[in-house]
Image 1 (cartoon, rainbow, N blue to C red):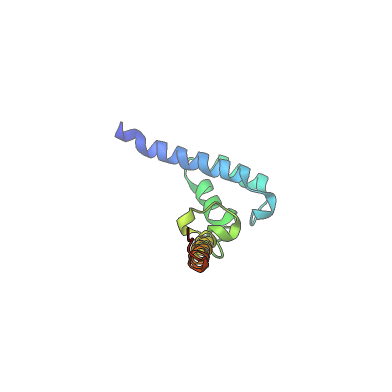
Image 2: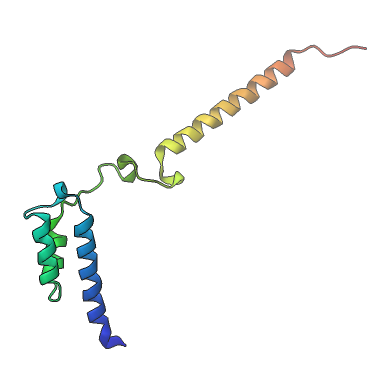
Amino acid sequence: MLRYLPFLLVLALWIYAFVDCLNTPEKEVRGLPKVVWIIIILLFGEVLIGPVAWLVAGKVRQAPANGPAAQGRWVAPDDNPEFLKSLNEDDRTRDDEKRDDRTTDDETPPKTD
């Protein structure tokens, strides 16, 4: 079973590079036209030259500017500074309301029967 592992890893990289190339918009492809990259990946996939060349030189890879939130991707609430800020604002609003309720209760005169 272990002797098939290198073959399966090469196959997985080959398929990944091929699908990645197909799904990449034409404007993000560097160096050569997209069709040429697909041919290179398919022809030289067995020896890993095609897929590795695509992953290294074929696609424009960009690092996120300020993390995933800056690009509109979903971010967990505890990692999202905007969400945490809104929680602080909600806490302040509740505290203000409680303070207002206490002051109005203190200002009402006691009932006498």
